[in-house]
Amino acid sequence: MREKENKTHKHVIIFSIIALSCGWIGRLVDQQVGTDQNGSLGQLLWIVSPLLTMVIMRSWMGDGWKDFGLKPRFKGNLLLYGFSVLFYPLMTVAIVGIGLGLGWTEISPSFSTFLTAFGMALLPGFIKNIFEEFAWRGYLAPKLFTLGINRFLVHITVGIVWGAWHFPFLHLFLDTTESMITYIPRLMIGMIAMAILYGEILLMTKSVWPAVLMHTMGNAFIDTLILKKYIQVHESYNVVGMPSPEGILAIALTGLAGLWMYKRRKKMTT
Image (cartoon, rainbow, N blue to C red; front, side):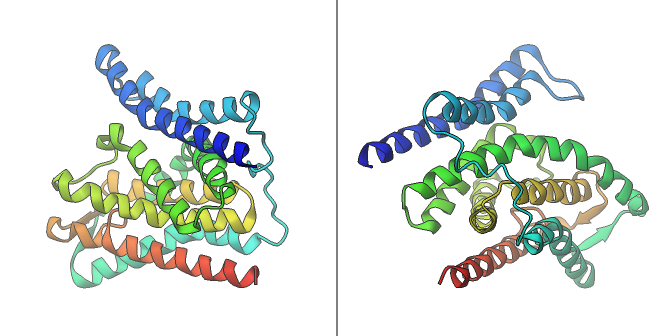
């Protein structure tokens, strides 16, 4: 047993090092070969490397596939699937509604085209998040859970590694003039809150697919609203009223949802 735990520790460290370094290597690649409107070789390396590392470790380094969570496990989990699909749209509507009511947020005149843009973002987001979630909820989280570490410590660790993985290409998703000194710590808190929510649903369903769907809906709904300028949050209220992971209201609502899932799962297991 001790030998197995040591092996898992070693593999988690190897996976984390590769995941945290692949993006910076990708940035170096992009500086040499350039980018275009369709992305870049460096971005592909950044997205694909954690998944390939997971496949190698599970297939050829003895980790196996037992705790991967590939089966959808719909039976008994339909409410959790529904929650995973609806959480980000409902949270975003609530935050934008508060912003509109308090004068923090304005809606673009072109908002009528939002649903079309959102729909077009779903399939690319779904494919991208298979790569991302198969790595974080398909490998890092379940491997840490097998070590018997405190559950919240696992969520925090996953959130930190997952958040730091975004750093090399963070500029692709930013729409702020805020200093990184204040932005990044808040982003990391938001990523930890999401890791708690995703992780608790993973533990309840024993499937990676709710995380894939939740992540896809979040990217398609929130990123489309913000990056395509369908909403505009006044700069002085960005910290509070932005519905993205680093917004204070978004952190609070995501954190509360994660704690609710934690308590719900605790009741199910007692």
